[in-house]
Figure (cartoon, rainbow, N blue to C red):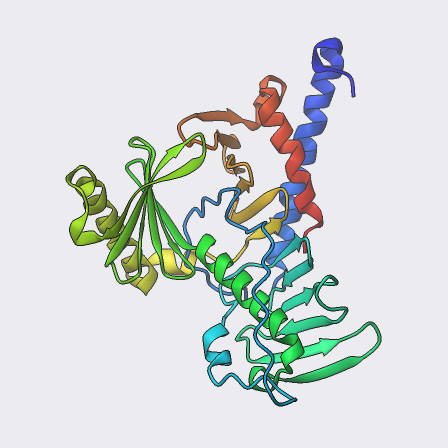
Length: 343
């Protein structure tokens, strides 16, 4: 592709026009596809600012449990209770690991094809209680987790840990107040990031323990961890403001936020390696895995808001500004075309 400086004004203008038409076509396709989904489930979430780490990319290899003395099903009495999980709230996604592919469908079904561990394909229901094992041609086994043969327990443990990490990194609800972004994750943990102070605080669901990180160059450096009653004085103000925001999030989550509960619907699309797209009416939010966020509002003049990963730099443009858009903004607009093919 020729560099932009080497093309003439007419070609540059035509390229901007084509890009704008392509973007409008993409946004229409995304909205039309989501509007065809019957009775989409209500999702209590506001501006889910997802970073590149929100969908786990690492591989998970749980330890293989000891073989039981007798044959047949695995005999550890608390196995099902220990590794039970739920995919409720996790949007559809597909994750590639060094062992194979893990998929969560729209219905919450967890599918695992991990050739380095087993040649079979495993399907686990959203509540993790029913498991189906298949090979390329037929169903090999079907039953409950309590009946699961020992040789496949490693797959179940693998699935349980994957879902647990997803729930720790995907927000159920997110709000922003006065440069502080608060999120309740699917596992109930709350985190608040203060962009002015550069601190991220994570609070347990019971509000008994907290961890405080300093964010530098997109890395989290742990500065303090312990019971909230023993928090150092220099972090007390951060803790107090975070707890207030946490209670506000809980109020919204419990339905006391009025319209917020009914207005937001599940519209998240995920493309591994690219990021997420969330749609609300004529507003489109794109959260890229490198931390960049882009909001596009098709109402009025068609506002485009671009935020860097640090959250400190915010740029605003309009649909008619395509010819003047910086390269990095154009690159992101070209990148979101991949969402067109997501089901």
